[in-house]
Image (cartoon, rainbow, N blue to C red):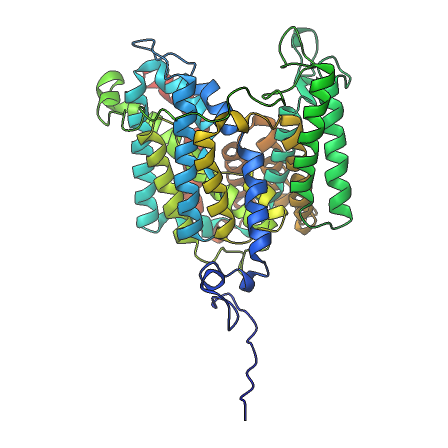
Length: 494
């Protein structure tokens, strides 16, 4: 007689159904309702939507001279270490964190490092402060403070953070594709941005973006598996064909209707040996001696606050979009995720790639079905390949990848229906959180405004006792963050 066994229903505490492979059990693929194929596809989608960082980060920190020696890090060297850090830490997130969160150099953070920190010291000294930022955040994780702060954020703000990130990445997609642009001379108008380069949509690259967006949206509406990846690949092929015929070229002052970021044509050189000479090129003490201990601490504080809440916002928003949060609105195994993310900041400074953090573009892979760390392992593996095949990364133009951000942003934005806007003490903080993220290009600014206004309105309504003690501390820190410039001026440190 053969015994009959019934496979138990997967639960959050289980590694997967009985009979599952080691890979399945380790990553809990079946337990999260996914498949290996879906995870690999999601990892590929995430890579395509964030591969631009290998090109963009070098343009931000590789071409900026430091404030002392006026030396530049160099585009080629920065591209190599950017891909290296993204590869190592994204794989670590997949293997240790076991969630589909990809990691790479943080946009906004890299600009702050380039224009506000390196402008006052040498590049090694600036990267030393980035390493200190990572050490501080790692300490917060080790002591449980980072997780405790996340849990102190009320459910309403967590939802608003997810909605805000959805709107933010949609705006990023529209801006990176050139659909939304700054008005060149805004002195004669109160409108800061416009549609396209001239107030109207023009140019073949724009047409490619529109086709890509409609294709992706249509496939999603039809519930086609791999809709986002199919859309990116199809639109890239279309872009290559269009460029070979019309020769639109790269966008610029004299060619506003050209391709944004990458021109979609097959590169002359496909393989190259990465230059990793920037690894280890940092100084832990030089920055303190160069600008003084107080200024250095304030610079580190700014980096810590931005990275700290960018990560919290990204993890909460992306996880919520993928249904990865438990019944309490928390992410199981959050500690592992935060450890990897904190060490990523250290790795970014050590490699001179600037602070690395969880990427909001991970939402594209999650939107395409990724639910486990296996997706991140593939994404990281592709960044390893990108180190040697950097020219191939430049084949995908922004117009082919950014429709994915718009579509996924819409999916995340749907969470807004869960907010009770009839309660003004919820409506105001939620609104500030949602709109300030895209309007200021900062997740941190949105969270900060939401937290401060939430605490204030609770106090006004006589509910101060209901505010978590840690939320009070966070609100005070954000007030200091927003007032950082006058504080530095008052202290006489510029």
